[in-house]
Length: 224
Image (cartoon, rainbow, N blue to C red; front, top):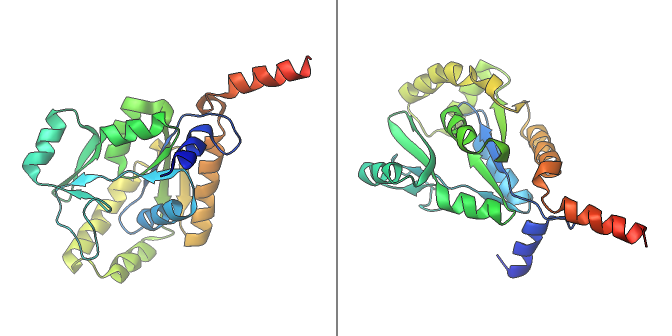
């Protein structure tokens, strides 16, 4: 990132300085949060993906440091004990967690951070930084559609897919803990809804730390 774009992130596109926010997307596996996350990163300036650490094996096409930080269980435990993770959870016998330092630096610089995490991680983030979090839960339009999407990915065995379907009901029971709910009938429509949420949340008064200075200067100009 260049110095100029960094300043733009801190100040915001309307010239008012603001603090960054944590934009959380959660969903049952296969409901679309990963696709939506990629679209947001590709199309929305000033948004940075939080790269989680995980103990699960790397999948075909994934790159260490881009998709996840792939680490061993001992290293993960060391990060937990050292307070180096904002949140962590166990999913399908694998552990996932968010490194603290890069997120805190981004928020202070006025940059937004996108999280692709489950309800457990969202709860932990909320406990630590409620004012900085905007959470969105993505729902599939039907159980049949969710199963179809899981099969179409061709990444998991039939047994794993059955396990994901069984887990989906439990994950969806946490929908009411989220700020916004988006039903993913169509990926383009879902993206437009999620994008609108982010744009509105960026304009919230309490996040725009430079508003007091801006308004005082405007008043000064008017009173000349």
